Image 1 (tube, rainbow, N blue to C red):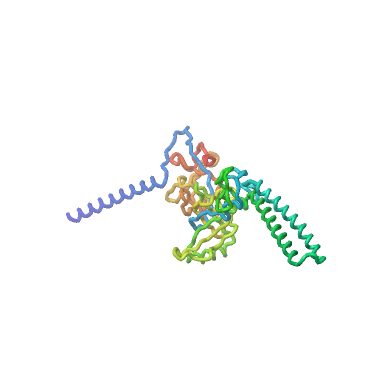
Image 2: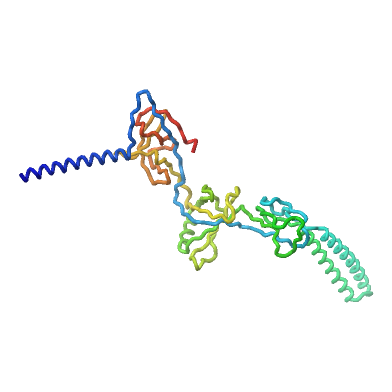
Length: 366
């Protein structure tokens, strides 16, 4: 009797194990393969398809950087007077040597005329004394005094010319000028009073820091790489590829943080980078590496592997793939696709290999 009970118990265990395996198999099949829902004979299933895209998947190193102006200037008057003209619009781009302010010129023109008259008079006096000195009618001291007076007058004339030039304030650099800090008609003085600020935006400087230990490896990679690329994530989230005009390290390590600043000068023609911005930058050493990406929502799997459904001439073709890493909601395709295919991303449960379908391509809407 005991032997029979043991045999019956083994049968029950085997039956339970078989049922468990069947249930697990159906679960996995339902999870990794879309259920095929047969359609009516006269009804053609409709699917959404999308084209594939390529992306740069080269190894990148991320840094947090700050944008700096290479050149910036505070405009300070060199002479005193009433501000007569403001020759720019707030926030405008100004070129080097453009006139941007005019300080009252009447007084300085008058000073110039007075200095010119003084020079003319003293030059005549000097020439007269010089002639008399030659004939022994004037002493050496008289000639020296006349020459000294003439030189002082000429120096005053030079200063008068310079003061008149300073009444026309020119932009020392090309860049964007901020708002005028003093309005027309106000008295300005030749001191530390600022009239405006100009900031150069192209080229621009991007500054970040690396650790003291990382510096050597960074320099070695930069030396070995023929092509160094840099991608910048702008504050709006958009990524732009930037050129590198120059790259250099600061001349000392910060003892507190054990880091050393690195500076990149880059063109900024479209003025996407603004001094003061904090941005994420990604370095690529050795150039870019393009890879084909497929949406994860287009992937299905069965016992033979992972596959996609491709729509060609309103007919479905099943294609197995070899896949690489996942990037966001996409996956790298190592083999199986050329890049020109349209893969089904919605309606997979209604189709199978060889099905006829009607297609809506959403690639153009992306």
